[in-house]
Image (cartoon, rainbow, N blue to C red):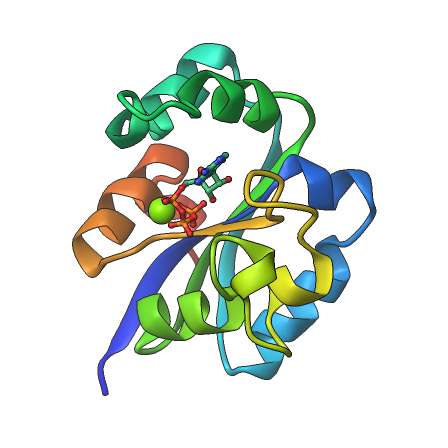
Length: 140
Ligand code: ATP
Ligand code: MG
């Protein structure tokens, strides 16, 4: 399996509840390495741009309001098959459907406040990583 990189976000509901370390421990235990990290508060414009693919969805405005409601931690994770490995440990979008042992089963509050984001393809990972990080910020 190829070594890949993916973009991870610890969302406002999780930073608010002081869960950054517990969530990152779960990622690290699966073999993913955190090779870049930034704690930031997104502006509305940044959040709208990051979630542009969802701008036709009914929940778009609510999603943007939520993502700017508190700090997030944006990270680059690296590892074998990292995009899929990260999404597996994150669990299903709706925590009611997430498998036992996943981040969302353990910590997510509901389908919106679901604690984490992960890129859904290698192509989107490259775009999302460059949204937050320059090459010099990433130390593999
Ligand atoms: P993410 O992109 O955050 O990793 P995902 O790929 O599992 O999550 P998407 O379908 O891309 O889910 O939705 C992006 C985000 O929008 C979700 O993580 C969640 O915060 C929010 N969201 C998704 N579906 C709903 C919904 N039905 N109602 C409210 N918010 C939603
Ligand atoms: Mg998604």
